[in-house]
Image (tube, rainbow, N blue to C red; front, side, top):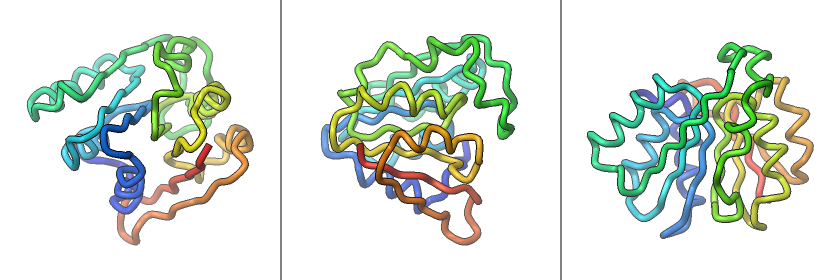
Length: 173
């Protein structure tokens, strides 16, 4: 399972997770497996909207022995967008995905890399604890910019040359 987040960006995210820390990610996949395989001293919660994809990722998590520190929460809703297109930002039918049954203030790192990313950024803004590292993958996509304005200080991390060509946006809440 290949991660579509550049290696230097994944490493930066991983470096922000303290020992015994907690990370939340909207959207699971190759990076989920990568994060779990790099360190064993933190817990990862993934929120996914696609049942078939969630099963595929969970199978890899189980096969590699990471179940004890990974919690995959499936919240399907009625996703009507298309991956990598502006309509993926449409939150219609995704309220259970956007508002998952987790306490945002428990997480040290949050990665937004699923659907309705702007809505996910917006709803968590007043719920995260001070000092939480918030990351948005594919930040070069113009349709996420409206939600980035909720966060005052941000930086863009470019991928290493030759790696997956997507920007990573980072803010410390």
